[in-house]
Length: 123
Image (cartoon, rainbow, N blue to C red; front, top):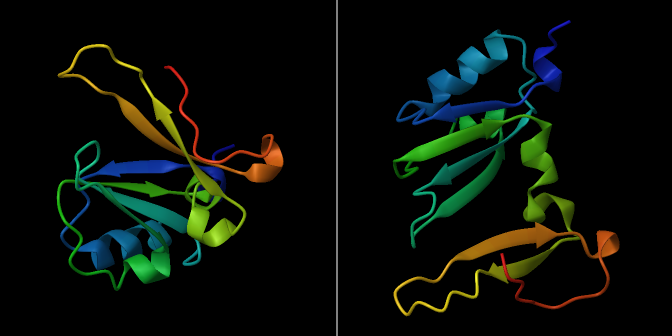
């Protein structure tokens, strides 16, 4: 059976009226305290992620486009600001080409891994 509260939604370019988007999601059965994340300029040097609830999203202004809205518990689980027990881990592609350097930032829970500081791992 489909349960909106147990689902994850990914909405590409949901703005600029985030209030309307949030209201429609709540109207479809989601709770106003459902966590969400808005990723602006994904994959670019100026990438920005905001972790909010749908109620907070309804009031959001000035979110740069292009953006991706992730709605559901997965956004809460990935939010280092809300968990309080995460650290940033850098993973590098170890590219040998001077013009190519792949990096991925991952937020890992120290409890789930051996004690670590920033570390680099080949992709």
